[in-house]
Length: 420
Image 1 (cartoon, one colour):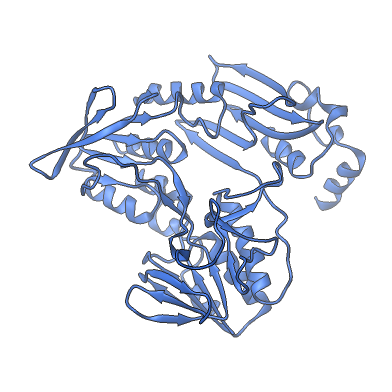
Image 2 (cartoon, helix red, strand yellow):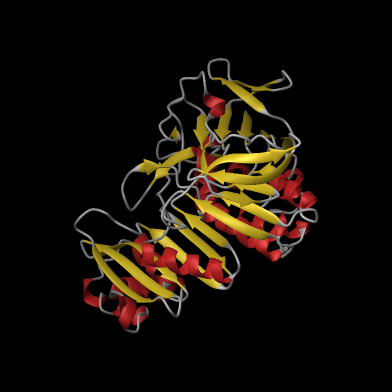
């Protein structure tokens, strides 16, 4: 039995650990285009800001591969899959046979069609390699433009500010973090960005990156004709499932790779997990990519169990994002800004103090929440969402009363006490 894993991040490691619990000896190979051993991608902004060392970046100990008898093919690019003859093609013409295959290729940056974007001083912000490139030029530059005001763009801007670079964010939507937060929360974060010295331009987009001497970036031009001076550009619009590897195969794809409750694709023995897969959203009931680290690990474990003979179902998950900018903690969970009827909104906001708490309820069950400034109740709210608890008897306590174990239904309260 040969297990092959394409990708070397959270889902891959979850799969390796699950496989090795069930199968101690059969071959596992990891193929990864990056040359780094597995590292924590959420920490790349802290690495750029010099808040963590390279040692802290690693997600597992250096002997992880050896302990788990993994053959690592790092710096190797997989370019195709032959589903019938069961092999993965590498860019160097090598063909790697498999019995069970996990596709955990994650997401790839969205690259807009902007004139001048192909330049050595235009960077992404999703990998350690991106941070290395920015670090190398950081002492030579003074001003940067970040295209995109989502999670990736905000963290990039924060890190650049920390190392003394003047930053301008250009965001197409009318507010930063518009996909993760509601308008009040976005407004608070935007104010904090400006207080930290970040220029924020919303409702606009970059139409061109300008260069001088055919090489050095000198600025960007916006669609309305405005010009912004900068020495480099970071493209942080977002990511899409990296499905390139399955092109030309009969593996089903929608937005990401379609999988069942075992994380198996429609092709027997081929699994997918992490940001590339369409996992089950336990709030909305739909299958869709939810690109967050904890779910990738969980999906990888489910895939690894099933690949190695232990039948396991993926219970689903839901979006949950946490970000802190300039001391302002923010958490968004599930549905944050519903547009349809049938939702009840419970909220408490003080824009001047930078505090915003909002809980979204449907049919007496919490389906989403936003916390900015004060996040003390986020943990218990997350548990109520996960367990689909009927909150009608203590709804008034969610934001305005004492919410604790005593507020919960007796059965749930006893369960929490016993588990503690």
